[in-house]
Length: 126
Image (spheres, rainbow, N blue to C red):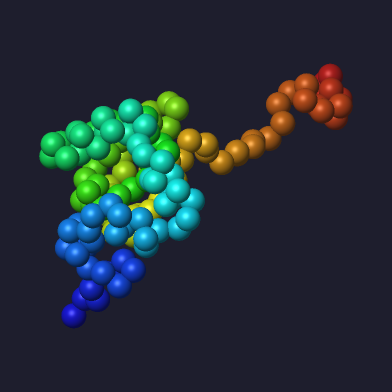
């Protein structure tokens, strides 16, 4: 038997039925204060497209807090170079969209090139 997934002791169906005020009591204070101030115009446009039932929506709103109406949707979040596909799941509630679409890649270094060090100058003339 598979274990049922819960968020704050609630099933996914109960979370989807939640209104925004009840949801705000369950998330951390930084996200709660941000939602209390209201959404920006870009965030309102995004929410309108989500409520219309569109899927695979492209957005630049990395600072959008994931709310229950977004559950089950696929959003493409802009990383500064490309749109990264993010599937919204129950564990993501209360987090920002930008947390799931990294805009930086880890630095990888290779060997030093010719002329990079003093020792590479000493090539034998044979």
